[in-house]
Length: 169
Image (tube, rainbow, N blue to C red; front, side, top):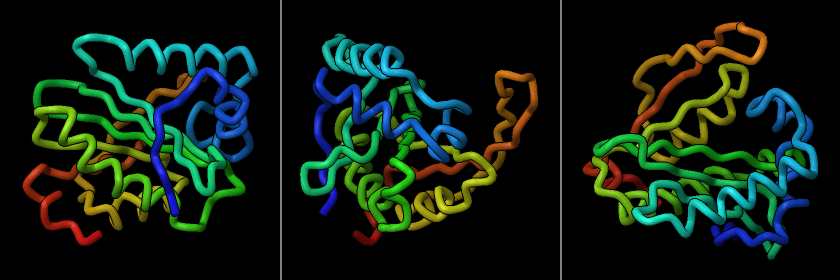
């Protein structure tokens, strides 16, 4: 069973492992260093203390093992962006789908926004299936410029608050 939990400073090594291998390819484009992981966790913890709060980060755990990260942020008065990533060795077990489904009510509870938005790397079709299963609808494409200047068309999905009330669990 998947559990979402608040992060702690001790989670940096696990977060570094999340952003490694193919997971890094689909997110950052490169693996995270130990220092970057510690800085990222410190940032997530600082964002959790900010008032008003606009960013949330949760560890995705199974049987106490932190195997992923789910984040959401209030992007505008009406939109919350959702992102998630799992360690590569945790793929294919339905964990991301369970985590996103759990996060939807939390996102709407913490923000007044009427819609959630998510996108995924175009080569990561499994991530699109996660969003489909969680009730999101594909609405278009966002051209994302990579560090090397290449433009990559990321599929974009949304879930409206009213639709979230009818998504099967």
